[in-house]
Amino acid sequence: MVLPKFYVDGRCTTLRVCMARTFGERTFGMLRSHRWQRFEVLCLPRCTAVHTCFVPLPIDIVFTDRTGRVLQVVASLAPWRVALMPKADSVWELPEGVAQRHSIEQGVRLQAWLSC
Image (cartoon, rainbow, N blue to C red):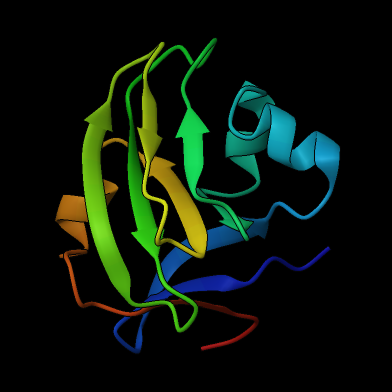
């Protein structure tokens, strides 16, 4: 299975994206450590809140609107925490520090495409 690449403001990165569309994908998210080997970014479409219950390490959370524009970045969300933004359309979960390394901030557009 070919996973889409992660784009930040039109710039292609080397990161791979998993679109969590099924109940199982959305429920377990980044909990399964072996999944990190296949992709680095998890996108939860039509989502306004996430939790880090049972997630062993902090992660970066990015809330976007319908067009992929970043509304809010929650850097290093610790285990056993909740982040929510009622106005969001999607949530992107990234390993800790990725948001900063890729200059993801409010107003930037995130996308997932199959090729660069």
